[in-house]
Amino acid sequence: MRTVDGPTGPGVLEDVPLPSGPLTVLRPADPDAMAPEPVAGSGHEEMHPPHWAHLWPSGRALATAVDHAGPARLGGRRVLELGCGLGLPSLVAARHGAVPVLATDRSPAAVAWVAANARRNALKVDTAVAPFDTADPIGDDRRWDLVLAADVLYGAAAADALTALLPRLTSRRAAVWLADPGRPETPRWLDDARERWTVRTRPLPHGVDLHVLRRRP
Ligand SMILES: C[S@@+](CC[C@H](N)C(=O)[O-])C[C@H]1O[C@@H](n2cnc3c(N)ncnc32)[C@H](O)[C@@H]1O
View 1: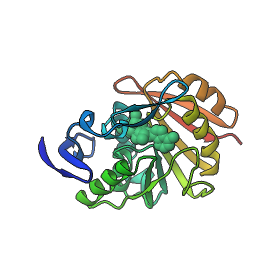
View 2: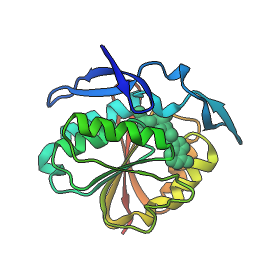
View 3: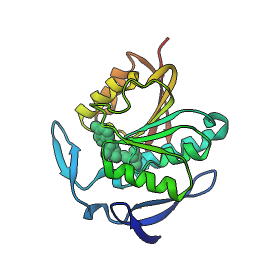
View 4: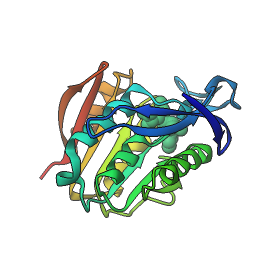
């Protein structure tokens, strides 16, 4: 791995293997050395090294699922990612012709790294700072065909905010692909989601599940 400057600190370049060929991603060299940020804990926020600064198994697995979908299913599709962290699934969606692709996170630093990765890979990915609870600036924009999210269900407040947000982002034809490593909040979140969505689940590698949500008729 090569060490280079990143937008908010030292980074390393990692060649992430994907079925369509590797994608080189710039990620923070040492997340534990970065300034702590608030992270949702059980009932309250705690300060931790930033969660966005890792390429988590769920993000990697979701990116691989997006890669498998390929240009046939993604070309021209409007794709939004929530809680994107380093935004690997968004980069892959853009690689396969999704347009527009908007990667969002509540961390301004996270989306700065996504933007840097889009530039490095000559991909068109827009970015925005968008916490689930306020939903600014993305709320009530229902143009998205596909909403992606990987490993975002930790903390009841964030999970509930996501439940409320998704219908504000999606038309009746849209799908939500949520990759999750089995967080404690997930069973309750899925029970709530089933009131409005049909949910189909399939296993991805490394203990990650892909939950595909579609609006109930
Ligand atoms: C475990 S990380 C996963 C990052 C990335 N999706 C991946 O799988 O590699 C969780 C991400 O969700 C973001 N996040 C957590 N709570 C959020 C909230 N309330 N609104 C928006 N983003 C949030 C964090 O900043 C972080 O980037």
